[in-house]
Image (tube, rainbow over all chains, first blue to last red; front, side, top):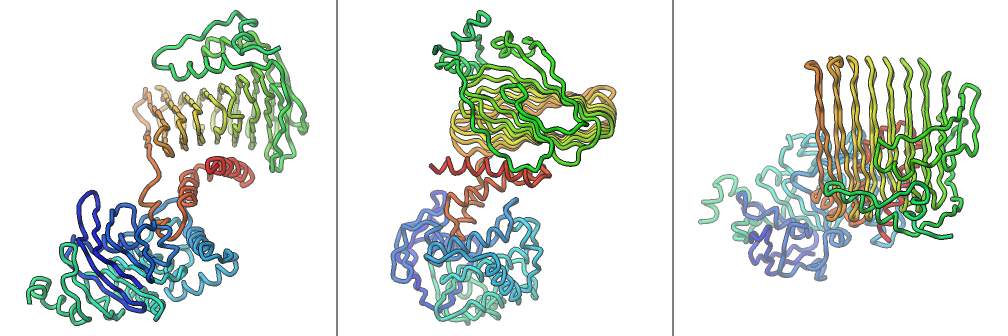
Length: 246
Length: 378
């Protein structure tokens, strides 16, 4: 699904990701852990081609070199990033935003825009998975949303857009146990053999709900250790210092 | 016969080159440029837009004269000849010898549907138009003034507004003029005791547009002004307001938003005077500009002159570009750049359009802004 080869990423002329190599096969769930400031969010942003990243190296999606593609083009290819702190956009109605995004994606795939009744039916189905209140739809994007509502809204967009590569940046931050269960239920509903995920998290707690295939530790812009879920458990018990030097 | 506007005007009143000074050079250089353009000295009638407004009372004022009217009996129409006071503004010097008739509308009882005042101007005009609106006591009236045309024309429009005590007026002014127009407006408003004026103005079109507004507020009256300036290319918009809180417990809220494209420029000079007798007044001024081009400029001068001790007052101005983080967020969901721009621009004006309180008016304004976006794409 995704292949990164010799990926180097700078933000504001500061090199953050350094010659990183990573392969995520179709259907796999990868988790990236690491101390603060090691480049976890930057890695996801560069895969989504965020404006602040200057990137070199190769990014391949399903065997296609997408290195030169911009944010919109990568979104149309099926890359979706859930932001750690989703921005508030006053004046832009959430339902209008989701409908526009879905129809832009459909247009890119050569499909007709979804008509309002079909859209609403689909939206209600997805909201039911997340136990969301419909009030949120008539509010401006993320304006006045609680931390949990913001994360639910991110997952709702993901469920509606059905991407093939999902990038989750600390989706568990700021969530209580109940909200975490609901959000991960939504994420798990998208797990399939056709779809891959890269999840950035600080806590193995999330991995009780989403089972990863591979866990990576990122340090100073490079993947320094990879393993299965036991690596995340070891980190929780011993901390980075011990695990990296054992 | 064809001549320059300057030659035409000099025949009227020995007009000479307009003086300019350093500070205001940008205004006058624009005027001088226009004066040296070829002036056709002939008119051609414009195609008036058909407004989707359900108005049983309407009046069309063409080149400052009544063209047609369908008004109920409780609206009195009067026409009188007036003389311009050129000391008000140096621009008036160039048209001071032109005859001007003032159309006066007096409302004596309530009218439940909006009143449409449609101002149209032909091509190649140099003229002055004037309108007086009088509301008697305890009335509730909703007026839409729509301005259009004025290609290659120089127009001065004067408005006098008298809101009687305990009355309420919603006045929406959509100034959708030709891009070549020079358009000057002077508005004088009296807002009497316990009355309310809520006003919305859209500035759209005109090469140069200057709007002077003076408003006096008397005991316990309220005044809300919402202005949207939609500017592009080399357009220049100058909005200068002076609100005077004359008596106690008056309230004013001035809010302006500017969408500035190309190398357009807007100046919002918002002056608010709170006199000694106006204790307990509430004064707010807000200005927000969105620069959609690195060559666009805004000069905002919100200022308060306070002569009383007991009041609530605030003012502020911000100028910014489209939020790159918000743009990135929309794009990350596959929304294309131009669509994302439009969504954010619409969001910027959303709250000020919300003050229109009338869906039909809102659709008219949105349609004009949409047109602007489409032109921009081309």
